[in-house]
Image (cartoon, rainbow, N blue to C red; front, side, top):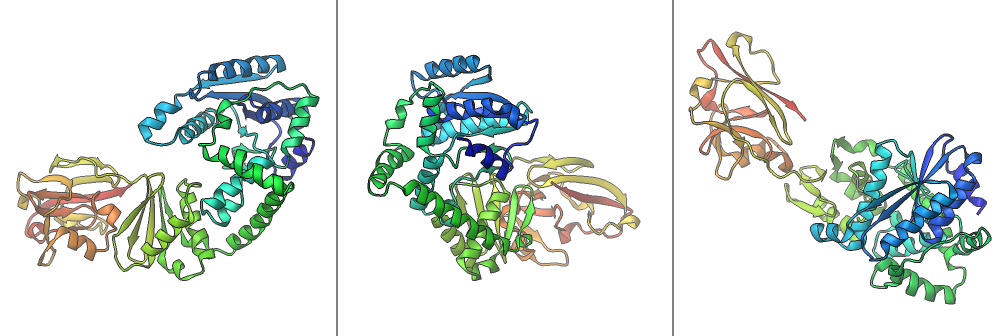
Length: 444
C-alpha cells in the first residue's frame, strides 16, 4: 500500500492543505483507503473526511450506513451521510438502478465540492477494477478512449490513489490493520454488467492467465501513451466553442478515424460528456457529416443533439425545445429563451446608423401582430421584393437548424414582418417618416 504515496506524488493527486472526501461504501476497498489516508494525513498535510451515500436499494443499506458512521467515529474521522432514492430516480428517468445510483452519488460529491466542504473526492478503485473497466469498455466498442481505463484524476476533482494497488495487497493491508468492513449482497448479482465481468468473465480469465490483471493494466498504460501522442497532433483550435455548443468542421471526416474520432470525443468533452459514447455513435456521426442533407440531426445519450449545418457539425448539450413567446409590439426590452435579449425602441430616421440593428416602420405593422416564434406556413416578403416561405428564407440566409425555432419574429397570422437579428419585410420598410422602430438583439 505504500506505493499509494508515490502514485499520489507522481500524478499530483493531492496538494497540501486540501480536504479530501473519501467515498466510503463500507466495503474492504473503501474502508482500506479511508484508513490509509487517515494514517498518512500528517505526511500529506491534508484533512480526511468520509462520505457515505445510502442509495436506498437494499433493506440492509441502513445497517451499512450505521456501520460506516461507527467506524469513522472510532477512527476520529468526520463523516457526511446522505440518503438517496435510486429506485425512484431510475423509474422517473427510465434508466437502470445502477446508473441512477451513480448519478445520485456523484451529484452528492459535486455538491460537496461546490459548497467548498471538500476539495477533492478520493475513490477506492484498484487494479482489478481498472482491468474490469477496460474489458467492459472494449466489449462495448469504445475504442482506445475506453481502453485507457480510468484516469488517476478526473475533472481535477476525482482522484483514484489506489489504481496501482492489487486486490491481494488491499486484503493483506486490511488483515494487518484489523480493518472491519461489510459485504454488499448485490455484488453477487450477475445480472449487473460489472458483477458479471468480475464474477464470471474475470474469474475464468484469471484461472487461465493468473497475471491477466497486471497485463491488462500494462496494456492500458501503453494505450495512454499512444492516445496522448495522437491527441497532441490534433488542431483543437478548429473546434468553435460557445456555452453548451461546439462546432466541428466536417472536413475532419476526410481524415483517418484516429483523427476524427478523437475530435468528436474532444467536442463532446467540451460540452460535458465524457462517457457512454461508443464506436457505433462515432460511425453514425460520420455518416451525418459526410451526408449531403443539410439540417439533418441525430440524438445521442445525455440529450446531446448533433446536427449538420452546411460545412460544420454542431454538438449541443441539452437540446432546447421551442419555448413560449407572445408579445404585442411596443417599445420595450424582452428576453427570448435560447436566443437572447431583444430591444425595441423609437428612433429618428435621420439616426439610422447602427448597422447591427434593424429599422422598420411600425405604422405599417397590423395592430394584431405579435412577437412569437416561427410556425408552419409562415411567409416573408424579402426586402427588395419576392415572397418566400420563412423556412426557405432562413435556409437561404444559412441560419442553422438549431436556431431557426428560437428566433423571435414579428408576425400577424402567417405574415412575418420582422425576423429579429436577421431582416425586415419589404412591407415595413422605412420611407418618408420622421421616426421608426429600431430592433437590436443582444445574444445569449
